[in-house]
Amino acid sequence: ERADEYAAVQRGLAKLNEREREIIRLTYFDELNGEAIASMLGCSRNSVYVRLHRALEKLERIVSDEIK
Image (cartoon, rainbow, N blue to C red; front, side, top):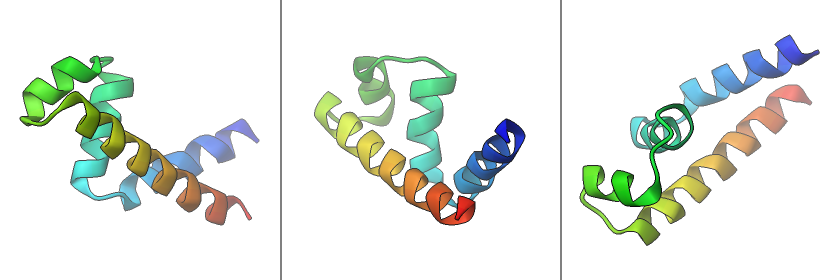
């Protein structure tokens, strides 16, 4: 079951646009904090958190639809 969930997340990430994948990658895979990400992307920390929240919500919808 866990392998199915992992595969669904992988497929979900592939369906996100590049900007959404980037914010998730920088946060969770590169483990950068909001300030570092904001500096890299040339935006505010608040903008980083908003973009991350939206990307995660979209990913959750995609994965939920796939698992059903």
